[in-house]
Image (cartoon, rainbow, N blue to C red; front, side, top):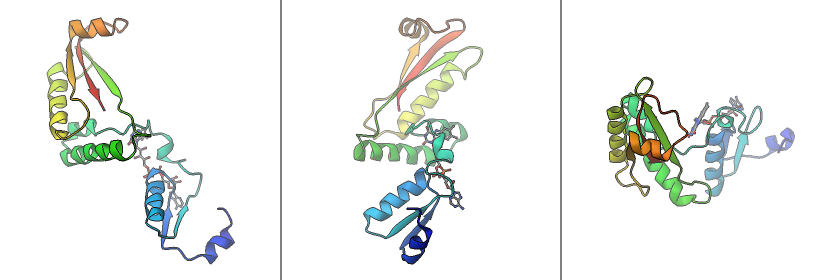
Length: 157
Ligand SMILES: Cc1cc2nc3c(=O)[nH]c(=O)nc-3n(C[C@H](O)[C@H](O)[C@H](O)COP(=O)(O)OP(=O)(O)OC[C@H]3O[C@@H](n4cnc5c(N)ncnc54)[C@H](O)[C@@H]3O)c2cc1C
């Protein structure tokens, strides 16, 4: 609704400033609870950070690097909730991470990170990660650059 005069005449229970994903989510939740809700956006809906998102409902793997363990656990729990309540919108995605001797984190570090990630998501419904040694990785991804390749890791996030 863009009729400002009419907007001013209505009394709202909740006014949300910002129509990104968070504002939209809060507005949806408030409206579903029966609250008279208005969402105000200065540009266009989802024109801010939300327009950049790669749409991954990730479990926060990269937060492990900064020791933000509570955030990892929270992200993993949220992901499980979304998988359960919105299976029509959220689909598991297999990710493959190649590890190179000269430009990646060491293989053991990736492995340790994956173990920790699985530990934090002990109650998840998705499968655990798997590490792929060099020969197996090369066999699966024949076209990938092989020089200095140590192996890789696969996870479903
Ligand atoms: C490159 C990139 C990739 C990303 N990939 C992912 C991903 O894969 N998965 C993931 O979970 N997250 C991802 N993110 C992070 C995610 O995009 C943000 O966390 C999320 O979009 C933030 O949403 P928001 O609603 O808080 O903010 P925004 O989307 O920025 O919304 C805020 C809105 O408020 C409006 N606004 C501000 N001030 C006012 C005002 N005074 N009056 C009216 N309106 C106002 C702005 O115009 C804007 O539209 C990514 C981010 C980037 C940059």
